[in-house]
Amino acid sequence: MGGVTDLAKTVDRAFAAALYAQDDAGLDTGASVLAADPAAWAGVGQELLARGESYVRQAWERGWQPADLLRLVRRDLDERHIRITGDLIAGEARRYARLPERWTEAEVWWAGDQEYAQQLAQRERTDRFTLATALLEVFRLLIRLPSIEPVGPLPGDPLDEHEHAHIEPRMLGRIRALLAKAEATTFPEEAEALSAKAQELMARHTVDEALLAARGGRPTQVPGACRIGVEPPYEEAKAVLLDAVATANRCRAVWNSAFEFSTVVGFESDLEAVELLYTSLLVQGMAAMTRAEAAQRAGGRKRTKTFRQSFLLAYASRLGRRLAETAEHAVSEAPDNLPALVARDVAVTSRADEMFPKTTTTRLRGATDHAGWEDGTAAADAAHVGGRGKPLPR
Image 1 (tube, helix red, strand yellow):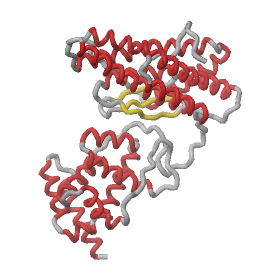
Image 2 (cartoon, rainbow, N blue to C red):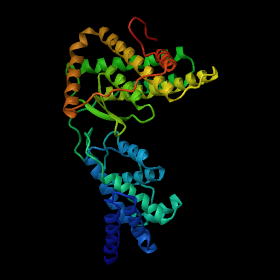
Image 3 (cartoon, rainbow, N blue to C red):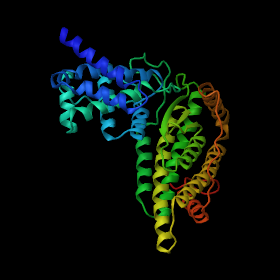
Image 4 (tube, rainbow, N blue to C red):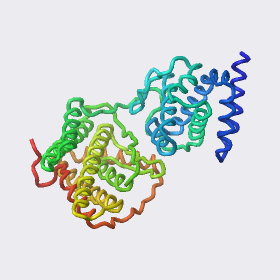
């Protein structure tokens, strides 16, 4: 019992020096305390894990989720810190029989909490001081996290009483397969047909879900929310693209530039559609940008970040207009379902306004490279997702 108390005191001293310091001198002091005694280091793993897991739980209670946390660690720290954060998330997840959707399936890899420090050192192949510093840097980031808008239940919360209708598995498989082929092909016409068919399936599912709910064929559903990473470079263009995809699929997107994500509000099946389509169109856009830049260089014109920024802004802007046209076309083909769709729109808007009562607009950096804008517009046209007046492929 005395040994456990001594270890706890060692950790207390290290944390007091390191976690609330404003400079790296405190980190060095805390790491030295932890690493000074080999015997203490061997046994301190359990204490460090327990405290780290409690900090992770506090992060969840402040609205964060595993993907958000790992994204922030990746931005501010390095790969070693990401692995340590994953350890803490996996350790904390052991407490629960069931985890929420969009959580994590990370598993504990170490054998015995008391041996965690030693096994971690073996995995990282570094000295105790360096490893202790990394642990304390992760803990310091965790305790400084602000509160953000929650987007779902916490681990351990009671089951949601409302049903969330997902895209039917067979249809989801077809959509994923179509988008994967669209990303893989180098022929614009083929990508056009594949993406259009995927968007058609998504639109049909939304209309069917709205009508079924309006007729009482589904238990009560409410809009949910999810977060999607919007990371540099060219994060402004990516946020514009995500907003366009969300709007076309009857969702609302709110961009948090400070933490590199957008929160998308909508019904669950529509959120799934947004995640799939945004990811695919972003992959297609980045690939098209790379090809366009190579063509510019081959022509003897050196292109830089301004070309890529202009390209992606044009790509996002043009796709936004075309996605809006596609959404209007889907509604025009089923005018009897308009009241049900309007009811869903009202519910989504209400939920978004509740979550984000105060939002601001952002002035984007302009597209200053004409060639980039022209090429980005052309790439958006090549990434067809269906539209008014043009039959979708069968």
